[in-house]
Image (spheres, one colour):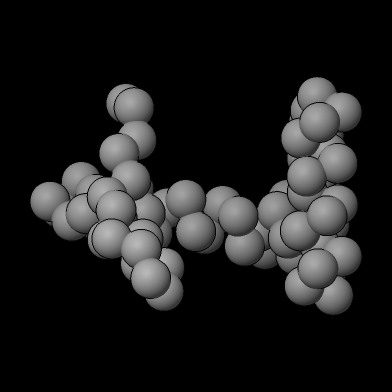
Length: 68
């Protein structure tokens, strides 16, 4: 079941969401759904003791720490 929602977002957040949607060739709704799913996944993994690590070619491995 779908629920229609109305939200107030700062212009900068809307611009970022539009950029994400455009880069991925999806609607704003699909981009927002994916962002929420990604956040849920990260939160679940971090709450289970996981770590988020970023690996870039030629650079040392870095851990990303989120403030809670």
